[in-house]
Length: 178
Image (cartoon, rainbow, N blue to C red):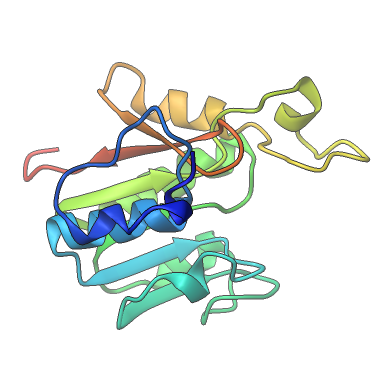
């Protein structure tokens, strides 16, 4: 089943079922509506496949090559960022050390009650989980899962599935004390 075939479940406030494949953009739309988020940051939006589809008036997309509206690496962006965001979606460099830096920087600028999401957390085949990307690899997750595990080991997290492949987008909602 795909959400595209149904009337939009994101027009209501109930959470989508986690046993159904879910598109990352639909997850972001659900979170925006459910929690009333007004600001959005996407790290790594080269093809604009997600960034162009999220209807935030206040949105920033960071990529050093293409896509988004800020041309910089995530490290360069975070070094000069002087504001905060309600929802941050990290789909940047798929290398564990970079994921750890992106997580630390994102948590620093995440509003209380905000949500931090990571994409490409679960490779299905060994070549998908390699860094650097193996030649001939179509889907690539790199070592994102290792970085997420290092950042949030022992912290409850939710995993949401994007459409087509059971590759979770891992997320954590920030409380005023975390």
